[in-house]
Length: 437
Image 1: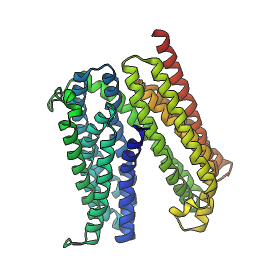
Image 2: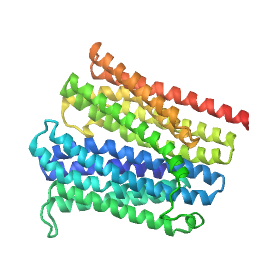
Image 3: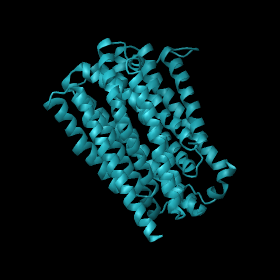
Image 4: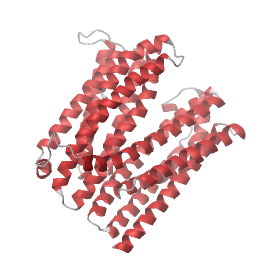
């Protein structure tokens, strides 16, 4: 829990930046600007999770090498991860900016919205590079078990982002009103400062001195680049499959009706907040399991895996009860439409079961990442979401005409499949390691 808590807040920070930007624009910049933010974020979030996945490839390796007390290798892995994320940041910038510009101009979007989105998209795209650099040092620190520092940087970064965004959007303290451009400038400044602070902390802290003496800015080795990408790339694909599946569910909801799509968005937003807790437990599981795996303490590894499953089940049972008891009140946090609230309240009852499997599947992924197993779990996530979950949701929601509830039943089935298969994969690898040991 000491590891997981700060990770939860750090991960929430990435989501809350987008949420804060949306709220500020919605209150102060008008409908066209709000539509432009929605259009930009829909593209940017997919690219963001790819970048986060690639950067995440460092953490399990650091945890494993630290378990072996191999500080030299940890320093060299950081050097290689730094350049992987720099190159990835540049490539992702080119993809999201130039690709999105082409897509928006040829996707029958409102010209006013596209024109409004262009400067915001450019500024948000530029922020990818400092964000990737920030994550290089964040994942290194977390791999060694230092999670509170990234949390603190993220909290203060979010506060700064909100304050700057309001000042620049409204035009306060002598600044002219910048509208949506002000939000983009605030986000870019925020991420540059977060990068600098995290770099300074890792490179100057006494905690990392024995590791950093082996860190060299211009040191790149093919073998280490390959080992990082072997984990980071599949993790990125896991994120894409998951984000893509829920985006697909939103499209299916849209085929049923606008009311259903809006209700789906309300319920999934609430569910995503509790998912962050499970994600934090999963990140802590990766660190502890990776450390145990590195020093070949497989009985200890199994104990951490078991505790991680128990923790996430306990939390998700509590959130399931919360959703069931307050299903009529919680949707008011996001919408005031009575019809949307009524339907979202019904979906929150389904979310109680949904949450249990969502939590256990993300912890299963975290445990397997700590053991260096990412390729088979990536296949499992693809099958669970795209072969089982989405088709089942379409069949129950559209063909059987069960409506949006049917779509959620399909998603629940996909998460159940993922949870069971990932647990089976973990048990298979753990039993083999115990036999070998």
